[in-house]
Image (cartoon, rainbow, N blue to C red; front, side, top):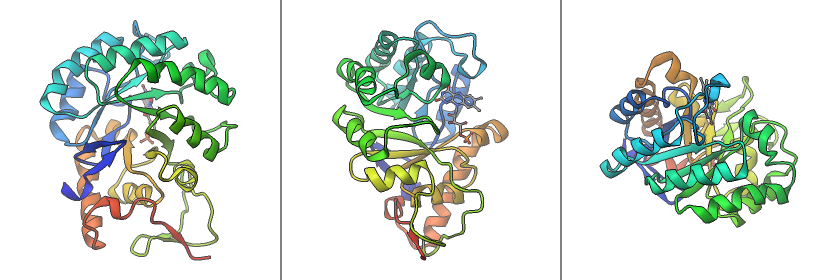
Length: 281
Ligand SMILES: Cc1cc2nc3c(=O)[nH]c(=O)nc-3n(C[C@H](O)[C@H](O)[C@H](O)COP(=O)(O)O)c2cc1C
């Protein structure tokens, strides 16, 4: 849908809707299916060097499996996002380098998962975060994204955004952890009450707008959810659980619903609503 096309971290993407890393994105057949049914970017499940049999949520066949698929799909013009994990700084670099050489457009460092946090403690300090990300940046040419943990960050959003920008990170993947009872009028993009950060996405948008692009992940099941995530600052959104429940078709459905809502509200492009939320108080 033309209305949902957007530029993410300097990469033109056909739809702001994409799959989240993990659900239906580990196996070759799953990735080809997602690729066939949707024009947005294709996000690979997180991978490490040799693959993992556990923990269950990070089970993967290793980087060569994904690099081979990237070498097949990249030349067809598919925008590819590869998610990287590792148990050492060096593993992160070597996995990222292999995926970069295989031609992926965006490398998403998954610093959100407990496995990576326990092994690397990337958020222990600003210096530590720099020492994790800098070698990946130096070893790769792809656009760099970082997936943040939803909780427990001691580095303030503005400081984090400045640091990420200085490290050459273009995209932050943030939690779309909006309150369940959010009182929002979509037509006027107005939330009841005093100005406040509504979610991690929104907190980073308030502090980092202009420095980085933000991708929202979590709880996006409908076009309305996607619309609200965009209003609160997301340039693009990722869909996880809805894919598990509904299958690959969830992406196209959410894209069509988002497109219809944009049309209903007189918007020609999703870019017109990104970060547009206002407060009544
Ligand atoms: C079965 C499953 C596997 C996942 N695997 C990964 C993964 O490999 N890498 C990652 O960054 N996130 C992974 N996630 C987290 C999702 O990318 C996403 O952040 C989370 O599901 C929240 O989005 P949702 O509310 O749309 O499900 C996984 C989630 C699920 C349910």
